[in-house]
Length: 116
Image: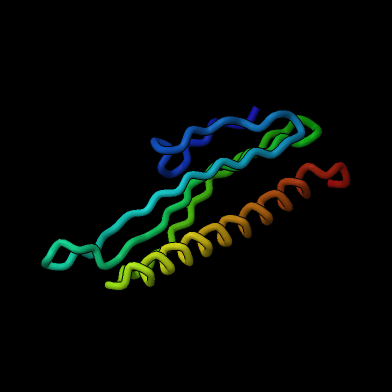
């Protein structure tokens, strides 16, 4: 059984282990605004995506890893431009996590290979 992972921001994302021979990925997203001007308007924001990845190898060994991607972006005066910036930040955060997931699964598969 994988060790329980207390991922960054686990207060907003429950974690469950993977079933035998399976991988499980859970993600939760949050947006944080900061960089307040004198008129109390936020000028910066960040998309945070936290997650936990667990994988149980066919031989029964369990692996787990915490994931976190934080991508900041500027909030501009145009609602459309601010929304496009937020969507772009989400896309970049998900791409970053996808690259980490691919690398982790490849490493775990190599470690559990019978040829090792």
